[in-house]
Amino acid sequence: MTHSGAEFSGRLVLDTSAYSHFRAGDGRVLDLIAAAEVVFLPTIVLGELEAGFTLGRRDLENRTLLAEFLTEPFVSTLPVTPMVARQYGRLFSELRRAGTPIPINDIWIAATTLDCGGHLLSFDGDFKMITALDCTVLRPTGETG
Image 1 (cartoon, rainbow, N blue to C red):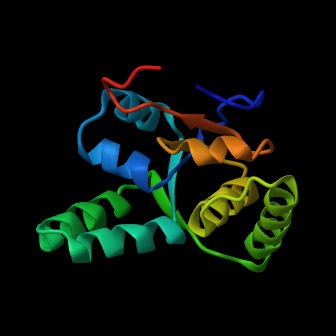
Image 2: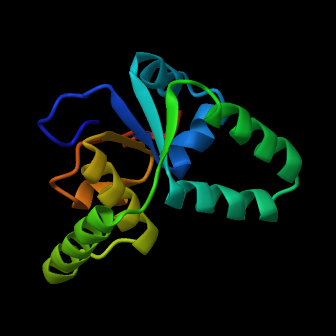
């Protein structure tokens, strides 16, 4: 589940899949959010959510739920800063050299997580390619193997 040796610091970063599972009521995600001191959503995740909302059938409802979540006192957004960009460049290069490229947005999310010293929660196994990343990759409920 956790693929790095670092302990969960209380700074939980949600990727798009984790936010979606949170909204669907996944108990594992709810428990980790409840245990966190602070929950972060990278701006890249906000962009992915906006795209999904626009393409989906419940645009207004989803935007309202996200806006409510973002007003919680324990929730913050993470911007892309010059330090995040530096992390991105390093990760992109390392992954390319290793022959293990992953989607660009995932590299940005990982770079943001590394920059804030957070623990990423995801359902996306691509993040396992980033050895420096402190993360938990969950399987969807009912999935085995």
